[in-house]
Image 1 (cartoon, each protein chain N blue to C red):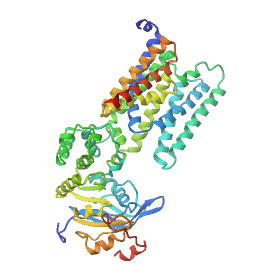
Image 2 (image 1 turned 60 degrees about the vertical axis):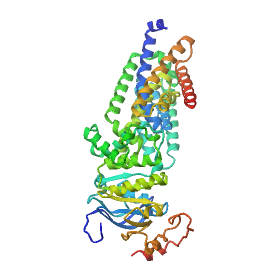
Image 3 (image 1 turned 180 degrees about the horizontal axis):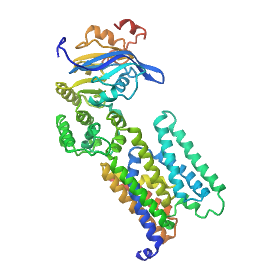
Image 4 (image 1 turned 90 degrees about the vertical axis):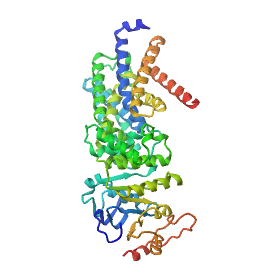
Length: 262
Length: 266
């Protein structure tokens, strides 16, 4: 995926404004994701990372701007997205097996009143084996470790047969060893699937993705391959815990953002 | 024990208990895993408005309760979905208004309201066969809806956001679930009374969730437990001459405590 090679645009966001109760969280965000990109967006909590994913998934209507996914409106385009939600929403006691969780990835392909088919079962098994969790298929989801659970959710996203994976803080509840394994899995998947992931942990993201952007209400993304001095300067525009642990926090005035956008 | 069965009312009571256990196990499972016990309580109490209306209009109060509990289910469900703030307050208010409306309708209704208390505290021993038919019809409706929408109900219970992204009509499925809760509540009201409905709705499912980790098995076990509790409670109340609804609940409650103790030992 060298620069200059022509690749199809799979997500197109133009001058997007979005927020809650009239308060904008995303301000004039423009982003173009091309096929087989692996983009990591970092930013502080409250900087709009999850909001951006919600807009891309059609869960939050933009107040301004245009969003296209796979060349279509988000409500249709989201069919080509596999989504890995933030792990905090999980209820450990929920009585459901790994297989049944992954099978939810097939919901979008089946109508109301329609049963899952043998083809669904085949795709579910395939998704589970591609994340190395096929042996665990009958286990209750609550019995898994954080890393195993994230693999199951990746499998659920894969069961939708996506062109794009959207990952929201995929390593949040995962220990470092397991997260290395998941990054390796994502790298393999990226050979055929576009990946866009958001996280507040820059150190982890920057060494594992192809390009990095910084989102704090406004988006700073120039398709840089890694954290260059430029990028770092941009990252410093984002207040709080962007920079890896141990580096003192620096908070710049908000209005400095606008001068850097270009 | 068997000689009690020679009484028609005892056979009806047993049958009613077994029938409601099915709905109770299935819907109670959703209520427990989705943590919507409070809203279910609201629906149960608001249904009293329908009882009052039934008396006032001289209709079968159960039909009034069905109408009111469905309206309450839809109203409270919509509030839960659409209002981000203080949904529990609004639901609490609807809960109280429903009951108040019921009390006033009963005041206004002419004549002697003999079996009014039976709706508050249950009267499984006095279930007429017409109510048995209503219960059977509600049971069949609930089982049919759950079978038809099972994959959507499971997805909405487990992860609403993901279900929405998969283009599942999340709001509609949620309201269907609310309506099924409303119907179940009406049935349970006949057996244990609306004040104790929540206990019978949640206890079998709560016990069951401690021992099985699969939704369908949880429903099946909860239904079996519900049948066990209603039957045991019924026999006990018959032989000890106690209020049947309260006895059923105490049997369930004792079993729940026992299951907690058992679970902490293993």
